Amino acid sequence: MDTIAAIATPHGSGGMAVIRISGPYAVQRAAEVFVPVRGCSPLDMAGYTCGYGYFVQDGVRLDDVVLTVFRAPHSYTGEDVAEISCHGGRYLTERLLRAVLCSEVRLAGAGEFTRRAFLNGKLSLTQAEAVADVIAASGEKELQCARALRDGATFRRIQRLSRVLLELLSDLAVWADYPDEDIPEVDGGAMELRLKELLGDMRGLLATYDYGRILREGLRTAIVGRPNVGKSTLFNALSGCERSIVTDIAGTTRDVVEEQVRIGAYRLRLSDTAGVHETDEPIEKIGVERSLQHLQEAELVLAVFDTSEPCSDADAALLERLPVERTICVCNKSDKGQCWTPAGEYAEIVEISAKNEDNLKTLEAAVERFAQRQGGAWEDGMIANERQRDCLRTAVEAVQEALEALQMGMAFDAVTVCLDAAAEALLQLTGERITDRVADTVFERFCVGK
Image (cartoon, rainbow, N blue to C red):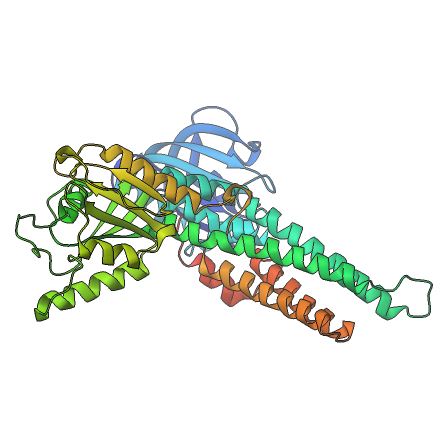
């Protein structure tokens, strides 16, 4: 491979910046621009060692720098790597990068350092993708999940699935290829049980995709209720600003108002909807229809009721529409007393006063518990993006077809074809078999210096 270089720290002014060089000419190029204050030349530096000196070009000292050398294969990319830490002025950093570039060293492309780490066997493809997730993490849970992926949890979980597939395929191959040998016949009943167990494990891993999407994009959350129960007041309290107009006039909110808010470790894509009630007024009717649409599409529903007043017909009608398993019932205006409590197996029932912001922490804790329950055992690996999801979904469908073929009494050859397709999909997921086009798509979302 050729040698590449790039600025590995964000553009702009800062205390320091890092210029990274990777490839067979990396240390040689560092020796050509770095003059140590004392000690040995970069060519003689061992891996994982640093030297203090000057960055020099054409005899001109450009900056005081620290040079760090990593020797192949014990580096991030698996190649010789030299990193020059300099002062973080934008002009200075770009000047030093231009000085590093030469006929033997070219500018790195987006994600090219991590791509080389993948190609050199330092990372699996799922681990490489997790590097971008670590960089993009905006909350503690996102960082924890990205770190679990970066440490290879997903790769190990998929390998366990692959091993089961390969064991089944090897049993089928041996029995088919050596019919005259004294080899026990494949037990269809035992294979059916193993396929069912494998299918359950694969579907369990596939289900983690939704949790990963929630962490990346936020939990789609709709605040619903009849007019004048305090929906907009609650929306503003959770948002921390006056995003929705609040009046004592019923029907003030006629369209959906949206805001991204963070509750604990989770992000909510919060929607304040128009009051749900019967109306003949055309504009209000459109608002109610949009509210009901958000109610159906939301991953979490905060159903707000004014329980200081008796349960109205509009309240009762809304209760009939609620998806109980993804609804937190919010009994508002608790400062005025409570006449009734919603009955049902809802995710949570919380009493608050949105106007006085009483018990908001209790509601936030309920939301966090709900979001956490969506996660499952993500610490053992999770599906983090659409590419991984598509590969795993293909594998699941192939195993399902193998199971159906077995149950229908079809020849084992048909089962083998299906299991081969499942194994191929898992290999594509981990990157053990991957096309250049797929690799380009994975790494194009990285910054240049990574």
